[in-house]
Image (cartoon, rainbow, N blue to C red):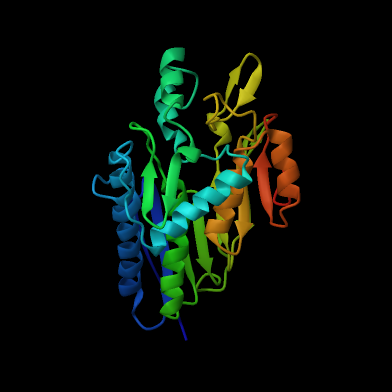
Length: 301
């Protein structure tokens, strides 16, 4: 039976979204609508850029002592973020986004040392309390941003919906977060391009991404040099300074959420610690180090 590919491109959760599905019974447009509606639902519910979202309500209530109730889905995302915070030795911190305002295009420092110190007083996942009553932020002025967790969760959620509708071939790509079902409708592999720094420019490796999820965190092209040392844009929630870690990390896993969690933890560690951790992970990965060399099972070097 011949399957026909249908696809849609749009923006949501601050990402360029590309969804492809294959169908032999003319359901392509309906399936795409289901996928898009699910993504828009999650954007409306969790995005920090939506004033009426759950996360915006939590941020608005910071310092008031009041809890914002959590449903099962919301609680699972907070528990996921908490697990990453623990695994990264507290360096992955969804409350540290307010530090970005102290920098210009990520780095170097734009604001004064006093501004950075003032912002750091409002950073710390240990100041986020969630229990059976819901979640609350201890300090007024605190903000949490879960977009980096919501996007991979959304990719997996869309894949789950498509599987429930008996889809055997699909791609859900939300910028750095990707989930697939099967292979392409014509039997070709789903491929994702990975860029590597090379002396002659940028070479692109193409990874087979069938029946799996993939996530990449960090962009080596945004690295900068401070006092002869190269850094990425990951910032420490302890002192607000750039973390001397890997410039970018990509991980493949059964789910996009698992892949993104691993990449996020690795990016929050110092370089050698991250490489050692990734080597013991048991998943295919690729990383760009501070020397602009690639590492990992998916590496081109």
